[in-house]
Length: 276
Ligand SMILES: [Zn+2]
Image 1 (cartoon, rainbow, N blue to C red):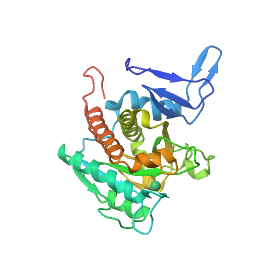
Image 2 (spheres, rainbow, N blue to C red):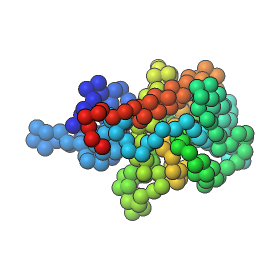
Image 3 (spheres, helix red, strand yellow):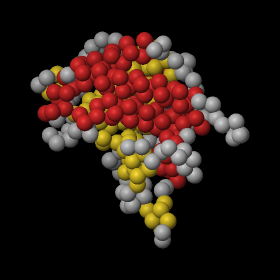
Image 4 (cartoon, helix red, strand yellow):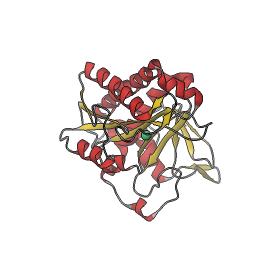
């Protein structure tokens, strides 16, 4: 089952967290045992583990040169705020760094907003869906929470039957959303971005994991899509990091190298001896 011998998995019985190559994933169902056997749910196997281990088997990832960057908030909506600045502004700064670095590598980059202006979530979705060619959609945000909350987390759309992170299941969770056609690509992209950003930030962050969510920007976009929360504006230490250009640049570099890696991974040829 686990074909890629280079991936190391670390599971905790009864737990919902799994480490794959040092990156934390949050499972929908806890890891359980029956007798001496360890069981992972079919949902987590199909929707989390398999696309991470075998990104070149993802059916409709598609080759792409276009990256849609969505700097969260803006205009009348500043997002999270602290004495140093607004989330909208930090999102925009990081997105601009990502844009410049991707463009230097030959990617075509489009931004949902190119200045400090308000866009509704639906307008962001409509903007992305108006792009006809293969593309990926990357939302950039910063978090806020209690004074101790810190670290980075990456969200992808919950597959049908999987609730929004931290919320009990509701009937609507069983509906298939536009972005669900890319469940596998979504998690592969999230894994790449989350892992690269973690490595770039090294000891300056905490791994909160890769999580499934039903944010409306993720549920309506018809391209593979993720949402990165690059740290907590409400955490006194992280607030100063987020303000720091070096931290913003490390985040951007992590996102950029992840996009290049993801593109290579989903585009890699399948082994010749495996029929499609
Ligand atoms: Zn935000």
